[in-house]
Image (cartoon, rainbow, N blue to C red):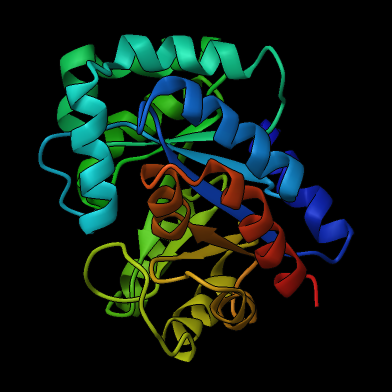
Length: 260
């Protein structure tokens, strides 16, 4: 059982919802990213989704794109993120999931990426531009190294595709709440709730809803339909604006909302 899977098991046993917070590595700088991880964990986050910057991030909205550009301009690379993960592991055992794009992984080498980042303390990866049908090799490498490979479902995912994804899913399944990119917006989470309900009939692997969640009310609404929620842009915006001090209170408000 991986660190991520153990966290979800503990949440289930405690009858609690999970809270996953996205933080871009290297934005606005590495030091702030480290402090943000500390603040998020202290405020009640159960896992950290660590952004790996890329020049053409197809799933990212304006805020996370801005953070990615800032990070790249700061000289952030997979090697420097490897050191960031090692640094985080000196003070925290919180699950860490890398969120990046396949070009960077392939340039580094798929097997090298999994082995090196696993050794550093990363627990898994989210690679949104690798469809399930093209992920066999990467999923195999991940499985061999007890490294969670997180797959996606969306409002448009078909019944057959859900069944196929669920056969190999591990860690958690990322339920994208809306067709489009990341970013805070008002949404009716009942739509993705219909998808998560179908997923839960096929697998015991937890489901986490992401995209659009930017307030305690939205967190509470989304959490009704999943085992966990993922919040990114609302946290990243505060960090980019130099408001690190607001991160912990904001995350605490999300924690309180989903604990209702």
